[in-house]
Amino acid sequence: MKFLSPTLFAIFLLINVAQSQPKEISILHTNDIHAAFVPHKSNGANSGNNQLIGGFLELEWVLDSIKQTKTSTLILDGGDVMTGNPISDMTYKNSMGGALFEMMNMIGYDAWTIGNHDLDVSQENFKLLTRIAKFPTLCANLVDTSGNYCLNNYPFKIFERNGLRIGVVGIISNDLFSLTNTKNLKGLRVSDAFNTMQHMVDSIDSITDLIIGLSHQGYSADSIMAEHVKHIDVIIGSHSHTRIESPKFINGVIICQAGSNCEYLGELNLVVENDLVVSYKGKIHPLWVRHKPKDSDLKQMVEYYKEIIKSEYEIKIGYTSVPFKRSRSGESIIGTYFADAVREVIDADVGIINTSSLRKDILQGDITKLNIYEVIPFRNYICAFKIKGTELRKIIKKYVESLRERKVSLNISNVRCTWKRGKKKSIINKIYIGQEILDDDKIYTVGTIDYVLDQAGRYLGFIPDNVEKTNNLFYDVIVDYIKRNKNIGGLYTPNFKEE
Image (cartoon, rainbow, N blue to C red):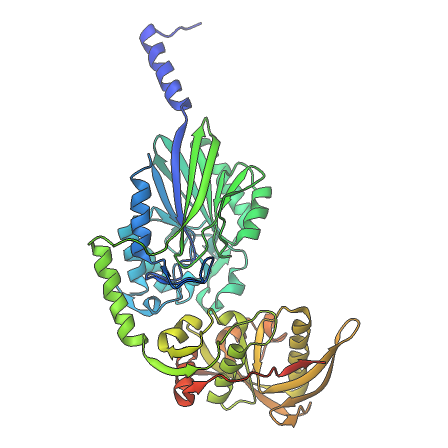
């Protein structure tokens, strides 16, 4: 038997006591920023007033205030930094949207994961964004067809804070190929999120004191993952834009998410001892604009891009006498109007767009180019395809069933009919295309956007084989349409009337 000398024994005791002492760490987190780098009117809770919320300057102020009171912090983002404001289309260091990541450098982010909208431009643009970011891109289940990490992404990173080894593993939704135009995903593969997370957790569990899943898959999927993945401590979520006021605790896993559009900052305070979270407390801070921003490089950059966007996009193009509101449960005035603009520009018989292409309502009053951009921030292009009347009838029947179930995924223009509920299916009366009854033998032209065709199996129920593509950007088409019509709105009458 060997014995330690008194000196070595004392050192051994000090090391073990130090390792077993409770240690604190504060996780500060955002998600689904969607390019909201400047304050805006809130769409969330307490939005009845006119106070502005959000933006990078208020975010920085609150972050700095919290950091001054904490022993150690880690700042994370859950993805979807891009798409929602024209800054996403502005070139900085050869990349569209690059200014957002430069601002995040200035704010002091430590890591982020990939969101589906961060790939809205192209893979090449995405890689340029990751080169601007001075913080790592973490995504373990997005690889090329050979299984390599090809987007400057890493599966995980281990941070050391306050004597803690913190492993952060990034993942993206299994549904990526139905969330992003697949032309931007060529050569990529999404590995199963739960299996990948478990594999990564197992590989770093013995060398970490705390494991965080940085997840872009939505609260429901995060809740299920907490039930299936062992030895994960925390999930910082995103994608579903969920405001989790106080952390959820599912199967021993702490789950957080902080709304969207840079309206909230999440704060999760943890005490860790002997590889266990022994206590936690969390909340979200609403980023109401209350503080004068400090003079800084960030302020200069924010003001620079704010002025560019104001001069180019805050230009009145029309007026609406009624609110243009979206709907996922039935027809909507904005959906029908935008679909009709698509139909008209390509001289089609029917216009079809997906409801999820519309990201914001338009309030009653003046309409600016910025309003339209915020409604349709995607780089979608107008397309057309020919279809026989029998196939068009199937699309309309599918749409009526979605009305019956109040789960609408399309907006359709220049089609009218009445319908009533049967015991199992809806019964449709005569269908009109314009002023004429639908002719099953006639060939019709349908105007739509490229994303609908990219996901045609889901939206249309079949894959058109005679597609005509154009260079007409959806955003430009709507702006021109409103400019020509000027004053829009008035009494809206549904085209699909339930009897």
